[in-house]
Length: 174
Length: 428
Image 1: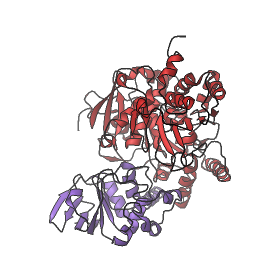
Image 2: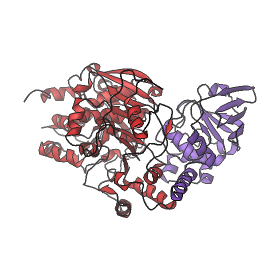
Image 3: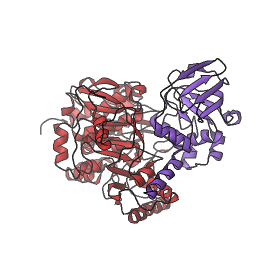
Image 4: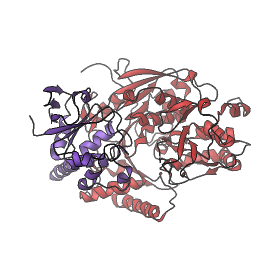
């Protein structure tokens, strides 16, 4: 089990959850708000407004197909990061996947069949480095294609900003 | 690993200096980086926060002012001025208002983008560069890394092959084909893939049509689009190339996510109903819906061929009472050519407004937008609520002929009777 492991409760969502509206109101993107402590209060405002109160660090959002589809605004992903949760989904469009990684949100974007593994509030454990998902309530487990090494490194670093800083420092040192 | 490669795999293999395969994470160096309007201010603010004072290669960076070329608010005046300052400070080319137009189109026109090139851009519709056989991919949050380091991570995408067959029937155009394509398939087929166009029907489509075909799949989740650089493309590209040409063709045994066919012969004019661009019906099913706002332009349909067919419909006619119509040529070149051909005069005499080259109304409705309760038909890229202004406006997408016909009638209309009357496509 890697240090990129979260354990908590699963919160399950349907297919085609939209970035704008479902995951977060567009106004936060238009305001260019990027503070996790502000955005965490507004996660799922359109679809599941109680989520910020219910979610605990370590919980996992289990999405369906095309989770966070639409114009890839990063605010929803920063909000999820602010909640301390992770994200796994049947599929996540590449723009939103990039944003999740950039925000430092533990994420597995290609987990076909994963939604059927969970009901709301069941106990879940996800190793994001190994791409292994466990339902501790049911005692079931599934493995998915792992992220590339660079992307796992990005999660370890805490997102795009720290990785960029590291790259700039390495460039300056040579 | 052996086996054939798609165009995308070949381009990325050349850039990476080794053979790459779908799913692999690579750090490809962009040969051109485009950043647009106010995004420039944000990207360079981030660079400053990270203490970056020098770009990886300023000669590869192109700043363009196209989303709001004619600034109409004090905030916009200030943003434009900020972009000018950034261009000077970092020593990069800035194609300011009036100096190019739409940044997804003029680089192709001017040969700044050539077959086989690899481009990163801070805008999703960079996919237009596929018209000339180049691969353009959008990067948003991480564009400062591309500016500072020349590259950023990219997962080598899978390719969806689209075989074009047949030829367009009378009164049907590239935009209809493009809308029908994204309206006929599950998004899962397009998601994160590059759409690669080829096949026997390709030769009948000009460069303007290819821009259109490369523009729309991104709305269904495609990461980019690219057209096989055939004889039409190579003749166009070699006549204007300002960069080396590395034209890449797919291998016969390339492996694709899927192969689908786009039969041009079977198409009718298309209209995308609210709320998404893939919500497409034949024009006959949408005809009669009243509209009060009509727009022709955008990176999807603001090219010379688009203006020609719109003018054919409008020549000698009037935009209906109660309809306002806006025409935005994509680039300065398109606008100048349209003027030389007399198309601008046709639009003006019909009661349409012609605006500064660029994105036009499609860039969020900053100019000429719509308010709550209004019904619009236009050739913009997207029709989700709020795209052209108020969320409560009703937005339709169609090709330029259908938009022009609808503007004349005052409700959504089939352009074919107008085109027949205009003897469209008949030898002069």
